[in-house]
Amino acid sequence: MLTGSNFKRWKQDIEFALGIVDMDLALREDEPARPNDQSTADQKAYYARWEKSNRLSLIAMKRSIAEHLISGLPEDTNARQFLEAVGERYRVSDKAEAGNLLSELTNMRYDAAMGVREFILKMVHIQSKLKAHEIVLSENYIVHQALNVLPAEFSQIKSAYNAQNETWSVNALITKCVTEEEKLKKEEYESAHLTTNATLSSYRGNGSLRGQMLMAQRNGKTLGKMRTM
Image (tube, one colour):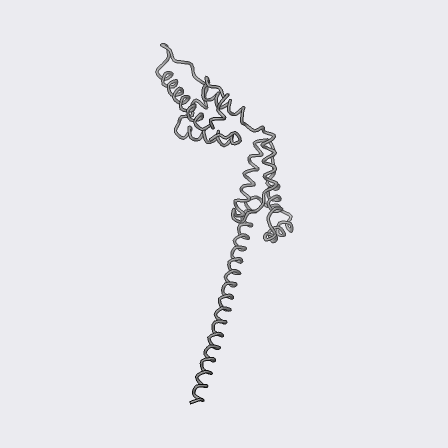
């Protein structure tokens, strides 16, 4: 559903939905000449196919736009022109989008729930989006940026990188970071396991001591009774 700020995603969804059922002809091609008595069977069939695509494309687009946003959009137009009109109204300017992408990239922070592989690949995804805006960031920049924002737990990876003269590729960085992340998770699990065992041992030890004290107390009472007899 087009809400006004998600035009790019909405456009991709519309093109995918119509394309997957082979109904996107009217979005890709201009309206062909209307057939007449001299038109061939192929020309008539092509026009019929385009007309069906145009009609269904318009229905699909209009049904996926919030009612309060559709007013003012052209009504007497074909699907391709309608899509262009929607784009002119809601498309974010290239400069604004590029600025948003750069801000997102520089403000990214590692999230353990996401995982380091997805974290770095998300950076690469933003890098490819920026390239479409003619902002080219090198692979070295992505590697440096990723290392800079990774938490202190990855200090060994950072030290290893800084100690070498050669640069790493993004794939090499991912491999090293994933290995380090798995090691950290294993250490965390083992630490938690040891803490749990220590707690249980302490509890059992205290329980045994209490049992000994109770037994000694019972034995003392029994001995006292025997002496009074």
